[in-house]
Length: 156
Image (cartoon, rainbow, N blue to C red; front, side):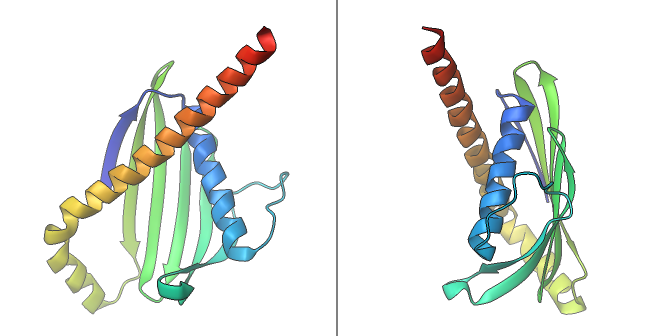
């Protein structure tokens, strides 16, 4: 599934928020502090999810090009999912964000089930993705405003 949105923020602000969320997810799921000198590309960890964190998935960040693309591969017993955020600058203060989610390595029955249910779930899935993108953009705007506010404090 693919969703596209336009936001009135910089690519840097949106991407930095994505990076913060990825680092937070790593730290919450591993109990380790992410080394500040390490790149996210190639990062692998086990993510716990579901009721009482009973389920697990392997997460690998496969692409990490600052301010342009973030891609992760999530593997669980339900198959593999590739999630990509592509960021394109429209002008100096607006960006287009494309979220793409692709299922891979799923068995025959899961594939049939997905094809049968997708038409019924598509609207809700799209709305969930839009909400996720809006959440990231809102946090990025708040962070950007805070930085600008801090800069204004120092200029007085």
